[in-house]
Length: 330
Image 1 (cartoon, helix red, strand yellow):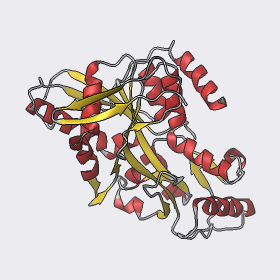
Image 2 (image 1 turned 90 degrees about the horizontal axis):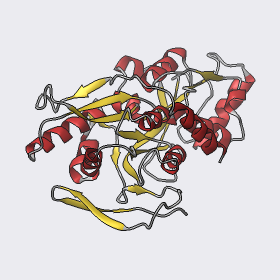
Image 3 (image 1 turned 60 degrees about the vertical axis):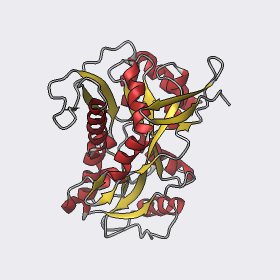
Image 4 (image 1 turned 30 degrees about the horizontal axis):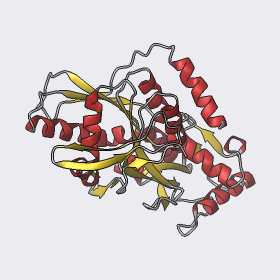
């Protein structure tokens, strides 16, 4: 509840501020919609840096034009989960791809985004660190054991190199996740003697951790987006599975802004269809698949109050159809 209260206060303040933000990139369907108007704006961090947002945007543009839609372009705004929701609030973006369900539920409750929250794909957190492994982690350790060992070794302070944990410390989904993992072993991360606060986007933060020989958590997409020489300077000690109970699973959710144009729903329908999911599961770096598709139920049980009677409706794109169930608050 405290987290939700803080988020609501922050968003109320930010709603009064003017955003002058330019997109990092604008996609034109690999040239099929060159110089067309920007019709859709997407906010995201890691999947934008890895190239997945570009792959989705280009495929959506090409397939839409093939189906008779007038050419259009899609813009990507680089933003972590907190920034993305702020951008949705300020109508800078139409769609957000975010990773923290508590923040997403607050956004629905505050009317910043429409219900439901859509489950778009599964990313996976990794615990990585220096190959010298001064904390003596084992790949057979569970996540709690890994963080307990990092804490104990940092507290002892007798290793070379010293044991340190790099946190992005930026209210991103990754920062929220590492905070929860520290709290899960009974520690407040900011009181950890080896806790290194490093505010940066995913690729930049992981690069710093590699050069500084520090442990950190990152996502699989970011890891495989690094240059090979930097990747070789860090080692994966634990990787998430697709199990919903895995503390390192990093579900990616799609949010539609409350004032977004109807075209945002058209993109969402496509992204959840077989065509959109194929783009996600086919996306690779260095020959390795970065993401897995959404589970069969592509909506999230957001715990938000029902605003009106909750019908079951059928939505679709082209020949694809599936059921969207808007669930009342629990």
